[in-house]
Length: 300
Image 1 (spheres, rainbow, N blue to C red):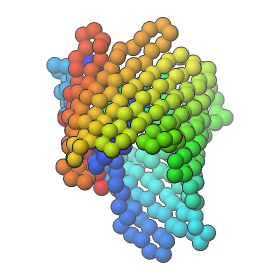
Image 2 (cartoon, one colour):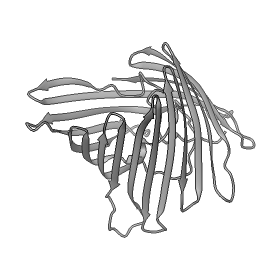
Image 3 (tube, helix red, strand yellow):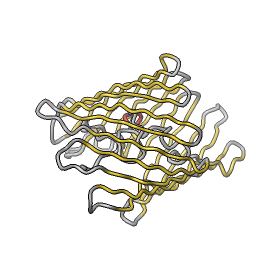
Image 4 (tube, rainbow, N blue to C red):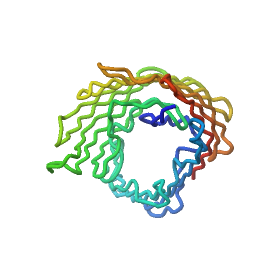
């Protein structure tokens, strides 16, 4: 089987107890608070006869400091240290910002607006998406307005704006709305400026439906420069401490179609902060081997 990339975003319910960090406030006094979190995830994976390996997905530690102002606003700073997969640690997210009512503004090394887009439910493999999306930047200005049933996010990666290099400047917008009971629709628009090539624009639309223990969703994205379209359909079913997930999708251009990809998995919550899972994935390419992952994730 070809190596499958992670989907655009991993669903928050796929590893509800373990993969999402549950940060804990360890100090709070006179409006000042200190919150810490950590998570680690490993998986034993097999793809073909000679490709068994023990892989790390997460091993990080984060700290958030926040202070409330007299006018009701909160200023905050956040940083995360993670294992980079090469037996070394590095500074990952690192930003400062403020929030007031439904508005949050932050600047620094962090996600872009497009990172919020996606309906993937996978534990490990996911469906590859060849419609390029830049979901992370080193000097990102991030603005979010989050109401009860409506969220708007705008972001810009300013790291290389105005420089004559072959790197990219990114501007994007994400909108999400609850349009009916259990129904959420979202859209994404992203402009990428490459100083060594043509500019590109990527847009996406997604919809999901959640009711009790069921969640199903579909998404489509298209990148104008390469004329690549990508789609995915995914779902999850949770009962007691067990979650079953499945998804399939494809990317294609006018010239050719890529291989149809799929995944199927199940996870079990050992505790509120730890879970185990198993997942298989594959595609319909010639001489392709099915992939298998068996993993454990813990968070604090």
